[in-house]
Image (cartoon, rainbow, N blue to C red; front, top):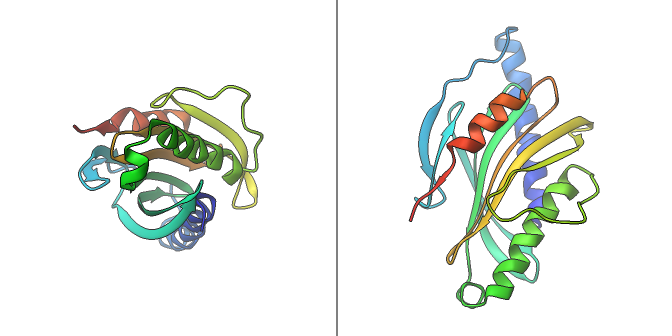
Length: 179
């Protein structure tokens, strides 16, 4: 399983939640921000609703990682922190850490069926991708980090209508890596 397939699972799961939310309330989305520690305590972030987690083994680059996705949805927008502890041989090798970070950034473009950029941003810098999500035009803003022990991504994804840019930025600004 790749990060791309895990990310698609997040969208499928969000689709079910969205359908139920539309039945329950036909009003504009409400954001109920709350700070939560995720990524085995390595990250603190403000999520706009109750956080759900899912953990799976996935193949990224040449390694199988135990990847955990902590996510919250508001309407059709998804706010998520994904993380995986680095295997000891990767943690000890700066080149292998870089390769995993690049593979994670590439997966963001693959998930949105978008062409990757010629130059990649530095870790911790915002990435914006326009493409397709759940069969509709969509977009995401994300940040990726590779620490000495963890691979971490923060993603706000949705459609232009479901994810206001300010809400995506608000989520990403809230993400703090803890020592």
